[in-house]
Image 1 (cartoon, helix red, strand yellow):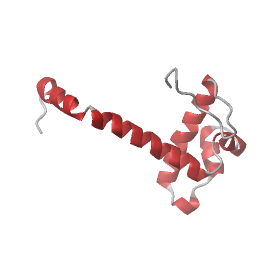
Image 2: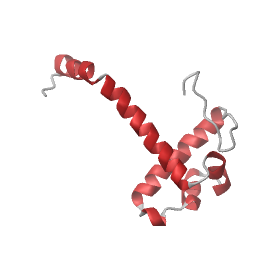
Image 3: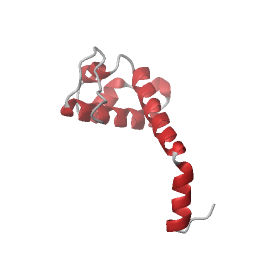
Image 4: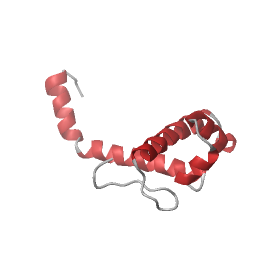
Length: 102
């Protein structure tokens, strides 16, 4: 998290360090769980169990499972855009210093 970026709970409260860690753990386990079962079998209770917290904790951060999955997808899109913006330089460095061929 950058100094200007603040994560918030579903009700708008700004998260502290521990809250950000818990949120990241929930997102990681949401991605893992949704990826391992069908969408209709995905369970917030199971995600909470995997994260070592209660389902109520999940709902402090997102109102629905769909909101959490949308956050995962948003983060992946931002990461891809950052890489895409710098792809030419990255590619040149890989060829020059890493011996890669494209």
